[in-house]
Each structure stands twice: as C-alpha cells, then as structure tokens.
Length: 224
Ligand code: CA
Image 1 (tube, rainbow, N blue to C red):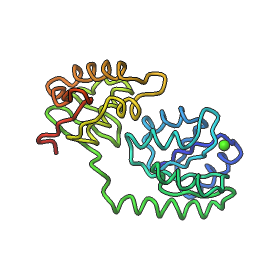
Image 2 (cartoon, protein in one colour):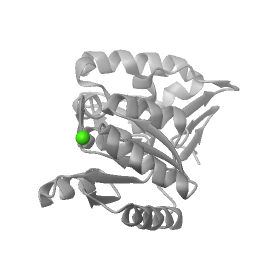
Image 3 (cartoon, rainbow, N blue to C red):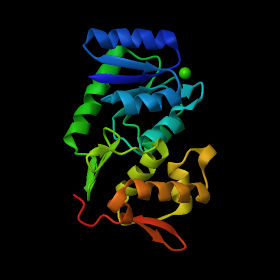
Image 4 (cartoon, protein in one colour):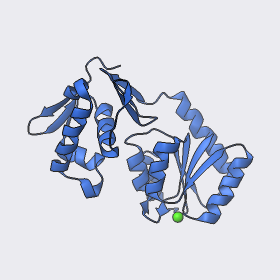
C-alpha cells in the first residue's frame, strides 16, 4: 500500500517508514500541512498517517481540507490523549486515531481495518461526469472535452465542492469558507473563481447556476 506520512518528527517518521517498508508498504513522507496537501494530490496515496502538531498548522486543518476533495483513509497518530482532540479529528473525517507512543503492529492492524472498511463501503460518488466534463475526486483531476482541465487548485476545490453538493443552493459565505484559502476568501474572490470556472468548463459551465441573493447551485441534471 502507498502511505502518505505527515509527521514533523524525523525520528518517528523514519522509524515508521522503515517498519512500513519491511511489510511492503511504500511511504511518501512530508513534514508540513501544506506539503502534505500537495502530496495528497500528486502522489495519490492509498492511506494517510497524520500527526496533529505540525510546523505550519494542525492536522485538523489538513483533514478539513483533504476531505473537500478526497475520501482517502486518514489515521491520526498523536501524542494528544485529550478525548476532545480525538472526537474533533473523527468529526472532521479522520477514520481512526492512534495515541503516541504506539506499537507499529497496532498501526498496521488499524491500517488494515480502515482500508477494509473503506473498500467495503463505496464512497459517495468519487467520479462525476456531466456533459463533456469528468471530475475525478480520487485522482483530483478534471477533464474538459478531451484535454485535462487547466484548473487552478482553488477552481478545482470549488468544482469538487459543487459536485459533491448537487442541486443544493450554496451561499457565497459557505462556499468561500469551505473552498477558498483564508488569504483568498470572501464573496468577491468567490465570484471571480466561479466566473473563471464557468468559462473553463465550456458548455458544462451553465450547470453552475446563480441563485439570486444566496449564491450558487450546481445542477446535476443527467450526471451519472
Ligand atoms: Ca509533531
């Protein structure tokens, strides 16, 4: 299995990576939230092992952002024994929570359990097709016509959020809040992203309807 390990303690990371390697798991190691998010998109891991205290933010932020676009299994590895942290991580969408220090065997057992559970339950539509646009939430790609859609990360996040909430009127605030990075948030920025996204989607762009006084709605129509 290909595992994305997000951990800033090099000693913990290298020991774990070595032990995962011994049982034939491949590890991509990153030590910040940002680098972790990029690796999630580019390396397409089958499972994420996530520390909570990271130099540029918390694992909670990672989970929140990752869940907008991916249903990859996430197991938190943390020294925080506070029940509230565990509840928060699980509520945000983590699949399991292991307290440090841990035995690698325990982590491996939980990885196996989480992946089995994940495979048994088909996730909420991972691939969306509408008109000549295909959005793959697992691969995090959008194909427009025959070519890869040249979407920015914000545009992809926006599209992913829209297709996951089809036919729902979504307020500007909610979209801005859930989709845009905090330094790029707000209704005006959102309107600009929507207008660019509509253009890039060609005919399918018309599916992003304006809901006057509210925000936008993605019309699913005959999407399968
Ligand atoms: Ca840490």
